Length: 434
Ligand SMILES: *Cc1c(COP(=O)(O)O)cnc(C)c1O
Image 1 (spheres, rainbow, N blue to C red):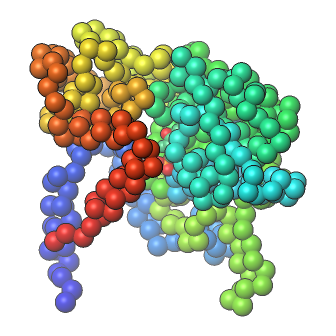
Image 2 (image 1 turned 90 degrees about the horizontal axis):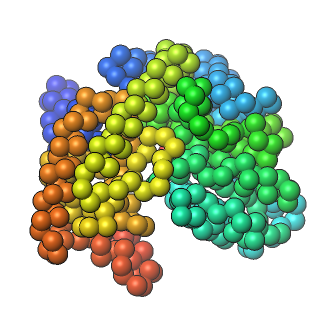
Image 3 (image 1 turned 90 degrees about the vertical axis):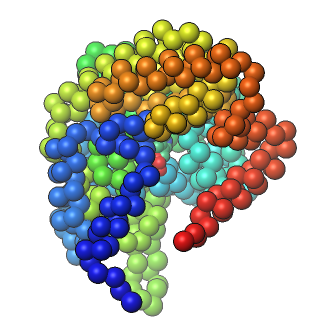
């Protein structure tokens, strides 16, 4: 039996009660809130194109127009004179596509699939490991220097004839620092190997920071060795979830991203990305927000976000026992402690209603700062100072909760067992419960 409309709407609303409170800026990742006017625009644009399907650009020329314009604006931002690209469902899909495209190129050049390698910094997003797993490439990690950036000298030694793609992050997610993209991409170019820049989190903030006079190194198509870039609109682009861009230096490189089967009995099938059907809502909403904010809007929000991040860093440094990892280039901050168990501080903060990520090497807490955090900055720092003081005072108490779990998983010597434990944990989480 179906349920009444009003009852369902009421239930949907009630189910949110235990969710992370992003509206009051209690989340330090997952949600990028640029304000009520932006959210309203996203909702309107998204619902207007709720049913449309970008799988067939001929049927919905509106969506094709939005997608190509979003990509063109992004290409412009990244100095891509001949750059082309597509919108995807998120950073992971953008990365999967860039890796697949490079793999197919290497394969066409006669590199055997089994032996092919992808060379990536240890700090690169797990989506690259996922891609290596899906597409049967061997991941080879570039170690990090003391400043948490990829070690260029190590990369030079690791690159070889089996390398199908090399990767750098602008910035990496854990530490928020930009890899030496100019040096890394130059090495790749010398060897005729494609180079992907993961600007998923930085793509819609670094160019504006640079324009505001911050010292941001080149990371885009200005560098001749960079062949592809991923940038998430649903992060600092402030679009609705399900929107990212993958972009290539030119059309020739992108060609291997596409999939076509000319002989399907059901018709000639062609698809630009990994998914078949593609919801129109996320595409329309991304187009709307980019046009609504414009360069000025992004500059204004970027300036305010960076100011908040700076204040946060100063506040954290002023708390006894805490330190920031490395020197963040933008608005991602990881902080740890040499004095006490930082994960226990994380649990304390969660008890106060804050939702934040954890870093494991070295143990640290992680903040993705947005403009919406300006209004809760004081409260957060107060809670953090209190938590740090409390954990410092309890000394060597046994960690419990998430702190215990993180500590346990991080230190199991048998990494295959740790891997398996996580898979089982995930299976349990998705167990259906009434
Ligand atoms: C978020 C992120 C990704 C993955 O994006 P999803 O949208 O979560 O799939 C990849 N790389 C970096 C640096 C990121 O911050």
